[in-house]
Length: 244
Image (cartoon, rainbow, N blue to C red):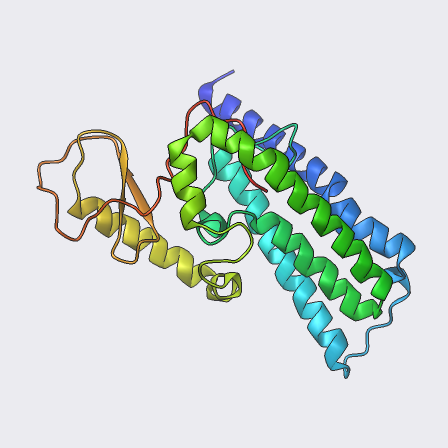
């Protein structure tokens, strides 16, 4: 099989795995269980109810953010959201620039939106129990594993980007949508043209948000606007896991 053919086949297989784990993990927790056991299937939308409208908005935002996380895992990390089939590289792009666990927060937004629709305290208790378990899993397993793999680099990243509270509101990143993506691409190009490096490293734009990676030396001298990043976000070649 040709190289393009292998790449297409690999991407298709990755997409199918991502879809499978999306159905089995957040699909079950935030979809099937509330639908089957908490009354979500019986909800009749009242379009004049602020509570229902707020619930629908929260669900829509949560789904949008969750899809962005899953896409970033596949695109940048070449892996899925499952702990048994994780990204092969540490993912620090997209929403992971703002908070270390945006996938958990996306699912939280979806379930809280469903609780608003249903008006169910039982669903809130269900979410609270899940969030406690997820937090224990993050603290007890994911973070120590990342610390062992990345050492001081991960410690710097962990010290810069919070576990649950975004540096910049995630909702702003969501609402800015394509505009933020366009600005990111422009910032990368401008930063790359202004900086030169003798080895692969990360140069940050003035905003400190958009990393530009260069692997070839450039003739131009290092511009004074470039500085070392507040945290080393470069991925390690042998990494096999990432936060979700």
